[in-house]
Length: 118
View: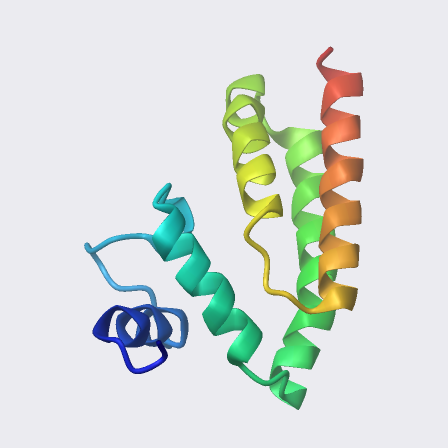
């Protein structure tokens, strides 16, 4: 139900301008009810021109970040990144071209990591 207080709380968290200090991080939750609510919310939000533009830019910035990570990060950092990549792969904003670009980037990055550190 879109009017439920929990739904409104998650919506406000996602739509915030800045990350707050403290509170629950919805991206790290293992609660299936919360994850389901996030998916319902995402699917109910319109893809505005602003969202579309951000979805086009983010994969480019992520690619640069991953290239720097692969070139300069110590193995201990890479060890922490691999589980995060797998976790984030399942929690992406549901815009098809964005999903395709980020999934491809994650797959390429994981492949490069496993080739560099077997």
